[in-house]
Length: 229
Image 1 (cartoon, helix red, strand yellow):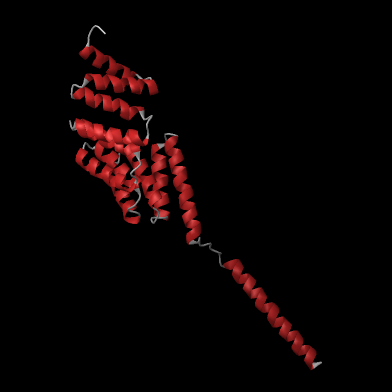
Image 2 (tube, rainbow, N blue to C red):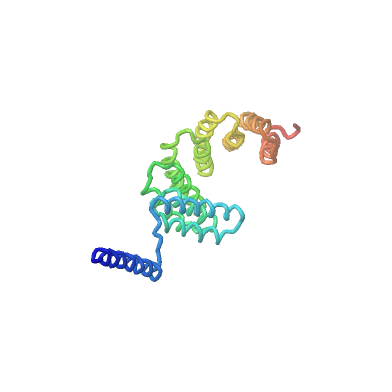
């Protein structure tokens, strides 16, 4: 009888303990703390949504979302470049440069950072800074024909026509059907009065893509060389 009584008391204590624990769980709310891995995944998802909003023309909304993504994960250079891209679209050039500098600190070997910087500098009419940024990016990605082409355009704007022709040639060597580089090579030859060569390259550009810019440039070159033609 004594053993049975002790057993019953023991079972009663256990059930009482379990009941108290269950009551405690009911009273104290359960909080979920996301792991660093899930936070990173969520930040990337938000960054992609920010770009989609930008594509839909929702400039302010995309900016807000990109800022949230960076707040969640400020160690991802791609999120900083996404924020910079959206800041550029919102004409927040200084803010964009700060974002790109943050991305550069994380990954200085990402060429897109330097190319984005060059775009900002060109919008600010800082051609020397734009040139330096392009040159830094091209050192990392020497086959980026668009960046080389842009470098040629800066030389063209500065009146350094021989250097611009060299840059356009480099771009064309990488992408032989790059009509814009061929067209601008024609512009450079036009500026140094080598009309036969300018006509040659304008015709090449038109053969690749018939566009008003090349046709007008060709007509102007022909008129200057031979008005009857």
